[in-house]
Image (cartoon, rainbow, N blue to C red; front, side, top):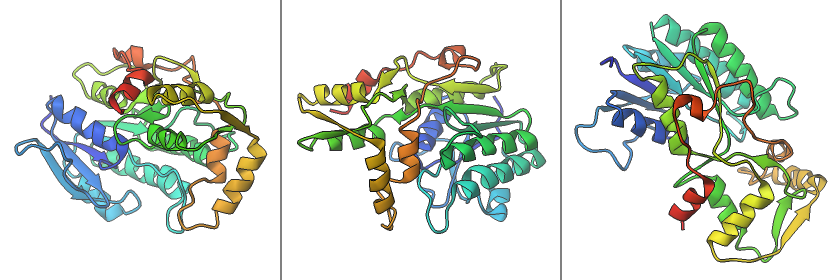
Length: 297
């Protein structure tokens, strides 16, 4: 195992925190990079973890963060655009900048965290940016490994936490009829996949779509969330046209709770494809959604 540190960019985010912990538990030295880095709450004195301030949009900070690194994980993500942050600046230009500079710095391995369904033909600007970012990364760092997880869950997530909040309503709204299919993946299983890439015998594949053990409709997931809380409430189908209108109205707010792009995402299945690597190719037995619900009660 190389003593050169593995740089985890976006290491304070939901996925990034789990990846940092997994790499440390595997015996790696880790350099956590973020715009506002801080030690995780599980940190023990003596853990081989360093902090560095870096922004994927800033070449100077990236250069300092990359110095001496043996591996890089790009776990930076942007789900909602703002005045100074766009999908293009983070997922395309930022990813390309990191890959180019990583190769110039002599980094041996680069893992790019993307998302299932990344496609240039998607109606979603977020998904198109993910696809463009993957292409840009591979242009600059041809041996990079792309990991496309499905929707992530785990302690402190935005997925189950949001659904659990919805269950407080007397009627629980569905996106359409709730038939969109998802394959929820525990964040620790994504972290294990990243750890596997930096093992002594990394996989030969360069593209993985990572989903949990079950494919569930949005309706089924909400039903399981309610069951875990001992609730029985009616589910209300809401046409996507109504959701688009609500998203347009919410777009006037500084921090919109719903965006047009998120509505578009909920109209597309989020399930691992067939001609790519999967969690089992990495020797991982993923945790079920029910396991996550049992631990988040």
